[in-house]
Image 1 (cartoon, helix red, strand yellow):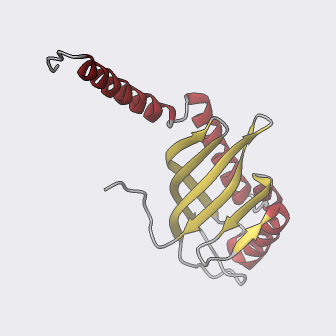
Image 2 (cartoon, rainbow, N blue to C red):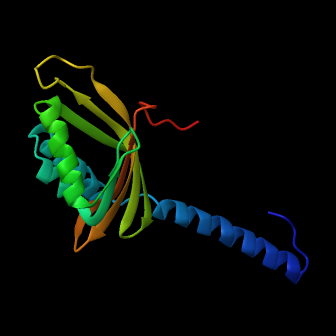
Length: 169
């Protein structure tokens, strides 16, 4: 600790200590607490379950009323109705019977009611409409997840297939 002989130095030292403590407190607050993390994990598990049952309506119900989905091709589907219709067409094209999985590897709270999650997704067991096996699909996602009326839902989901893992340099 420096030897402060005047009031200016003391004020600067206290300010530096407070800023450091504030930064640590803010960093701690960006991580979800255990119940929030569990609720987000449950949301993803519910999404996976709906996928595995080829339940387009169940997938759409995971979104807020103004939620949207962007798939790896860049197509954007806005609102549960459009999202449900998209997934219905996907299942009809041979994805029914496949297994979808997603794992949030990095979750950061933006506010007590909003989180951003980065993770990986995969779909295995895909077949074309005639039953011919198709290659598995994998990628990464970013999701904005919000709590409304005590329930966590997807406000936005962005999928891409150019990366297959979430890594930090």
